[in-house]
Length: 72
Image (cartoon, rainbow, N blue to C red):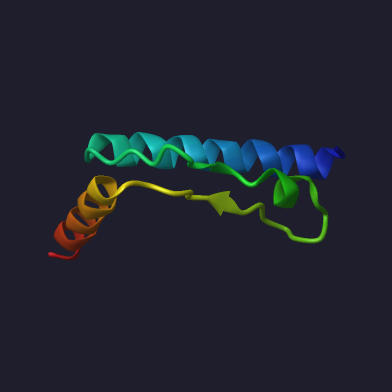
């Protein structure tokens, strides 16, 4: 992994950690939240993808409620 890829990976991991923390503050946990390793290692895209992953229906409902409240 080159320096650019390593820098992008660190930046993406930082964003994922912030997202995990903020979601946790409103009671939402996405167990599969992570940086997509393939896109992080590739020089083809300037930004790695963030994998939000799968969640159960309760988590999806919590996320809907949080987003709905944020629009108010």
